[in-house]
Length: 132
Image 1 (cartoon, rainbow, N blue to C red):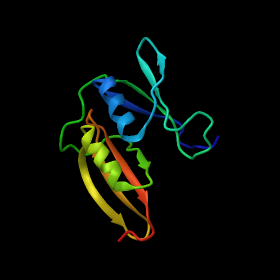
Image 2 (tube, rainbow, N blue to C red):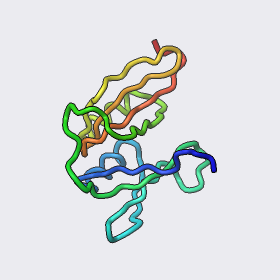
Image 3 (spheres, rainbow, N blue to C red):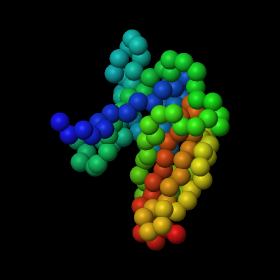
């Protein structure tokens, strides 16, 4: 047993809206895995890719969404990107909002946090040794 995270889930009041958001921002694919209850895979890389990372699932939210201004109360997934600013622009264009603005992790990376169209928080991480 390796004790590694191997799957994540996105809960959505409107699954199609969430799928449209993540597809337009990151290019993820969403094959339907189950009809009842409806459940879609979240494929973050092409099948057979050796790129590090995990795939996940997307499902209907079973209760109220996170309240604006509330503290994070779940695991937050962070997506590594090659160039922060274009991803920021795609997030905003797709209906996402800034939760915590881009900031430098000195000598390591640029990091920021966003809310998707369903109110879920996720991080964006751009490795950059020159970040200050």
